[in-house]
Length: 230
Image 1 (spheres, rainbow, N blue to C red):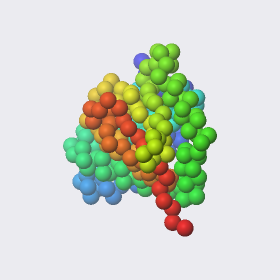
Image 2 (spheres, one colour):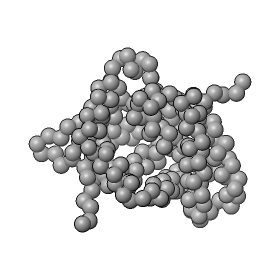
Image 3 (cartoon, rainbow, N blue to C red):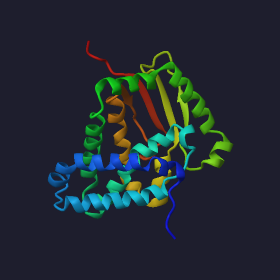
């Protein structure tokens, strides 16, 4: 029996696959020179096939009503890349470098004004209100019962001596749960590393000193605006 992709992800499948193909194009030189692979077309085909498998494994966490659905859709494809490169004996640090540089290059293809506007929206009071609401919802027993694979997190307001605008403490991570279920724990640090460029390219400074993937009790995300040149 064929594995089923949740209808929400099926709806976005074309865009997700296009993003994956773009990443693989951007990674071409690095795959040849750093990973020392020669059959790049074969690697691309293998990654896209693995991505089809990942899509059937991707948990539904509320669709458009959950901000974390977008995180899954943007980043889960790197699991497919990591799985394939590991099968070809590429060292984990090299995989991490390739994925982070590829993701940054992909993010920078968007116009700067568009990226910075997205950053401003993320840091806005309106979005902080939304984050508070979704954080409060994520910790409820009813939400966790309905979406057991979702993230669980708290909104963190700065104290008098803090130099960040707001923070999020992730007490449970959807990527960690996914990795634990499917045997991908060793690649988790590479997925975590993508966060810094994801925010920096939008004009946001992310500070984080610990992660669930690294064995901590929570991931401590702290956000502030990067200084922009006049």
